[in-house]
Length: 155
Image 1 (cartoon, rainbow, N blue to C red):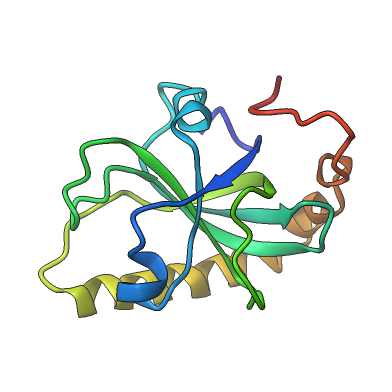
Image 2 (image 1 turned 30 degrees about the horizontal axis):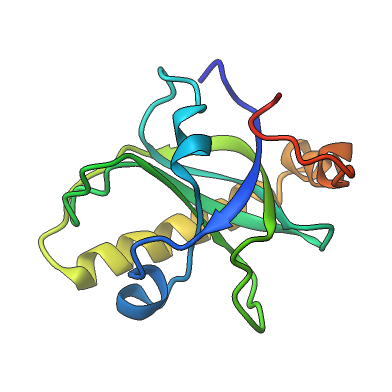
C-alpha cells in the first residue's frame, strides 16, 4: 500500500441511495471526478481512516473503494461511512479524508444480511485500528483545516 496514507478532499454528492435506506449504514460519496483522480493502482477494497465534513470535527471512518460486487456496480465508487451520527445530510459539503490502512478486499455476499454483518465487522476493525497511537496522530493533521480554496485529491 505505497499510497497510504492517502489524503483526499472533494464535494459530497448523492450516491446510489442504498447506504442509509437498505443497509442502515449511511455513506458519503465522492463525485466521479474525484474517484477518477485516485491512483489507478490503488487496490479496491475496504479501508479505514479519518474524515471531516467542512471544518467540523474529525471522526473515524471506514471506506469502500471499488465496484461493490453485491450490487454489481458499473462505475467504480468511493463511499465513506463516517463513524458518527449526523443530524442531517451534508450533500454539497467538502469531505476531507485520510485513508490510513487496508482491512480487506472487495467481495460478493450471499445475502444483504451477510453484507451488513461484514460492514459492521469492518467498522469495529476500523475503530480498533484508529485507537492505535500511530493512527491517532493523523487525526490532528493540518489537512483537516479546510483552506479558503477547495483542494481536490492532493492538488
